[in-house]
Image 1 (cartoon, rainbow, N blue to C red):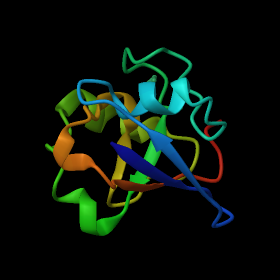
Image 2 (image 1 turned 45 degrees about the vertical axis):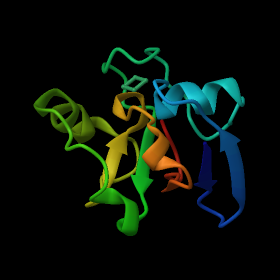
Image 3 (image 1 turned 60 degrees about the vertical axis):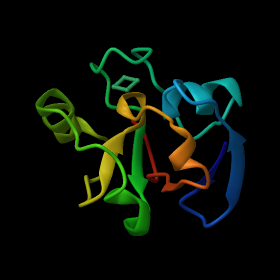
Image 4 (image 1 turned 180 degrees about the vertical axis):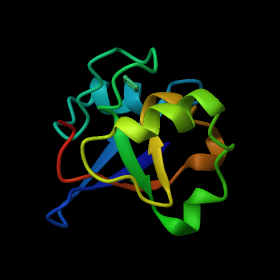
Length: 106
Ligand code: FES
């Protein structure tokens, strides 16, 4: 599947992903510079922040309470569709997913 990452400056990078991977893992594998993911996906760093495009936001399972709590610690202000990419599991239905990157992860 293909995921579109849109950087804060508007530039777009397309990253391949596999069902079962997290969105963060797909970004890491592609060495995407916009995702830091310091904690490796254990939901303790909030440096894997993405803002899901509105048209996709409702198609994702809702964030857990733990993810909601960690979203308070993102470096860039949290927005309505903010998520932590390590908590988004890729599925075939998410082919074409569009996420925006925050200006900073620190
Ligand atoms: Fe640390 Fe997602 S990688 S919270």
